[in-house]
Length: 165
Image 1 (cartoon, one colour):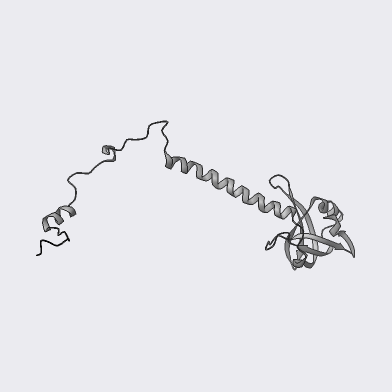
Image 2 (image 1 turned 60 degrees about the vertical axis):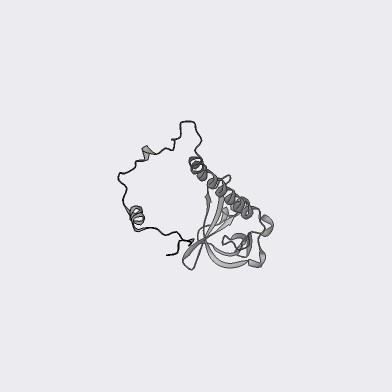
């Protein structure tokens, strides 16, 4: 064995002592770290309390930003969809701030909905359930699956025209 070696050798006795179970269990109450006193700042607690509030604020910001883009956007006419359908109803869904309105229609036995404005809702009040409609629908935000009513024709007459948007 070379005594000039930089590698420290651990003797068998010292190695066995490291692997031995402690003589007694140490309790957390015997720890020398002082417990936080009332009124002291605990950073972990502060972060855990603030995190849900931060997540809520960010979620509301994202929701309102997306909803504002939907409500204030112009129809994207290059994504215009034409459908022949039967009128079902108009409904109001409570939204945060102001209500959302939907035109419900039946196409091939399944009910679908499209967003409408309050002005369009008033124009559609004269329709009866089962009336045949020609719908032109378009999203107002690129990539959105929410379609907005652009034009509604019933018996060849525009019930909702683009100028009413």
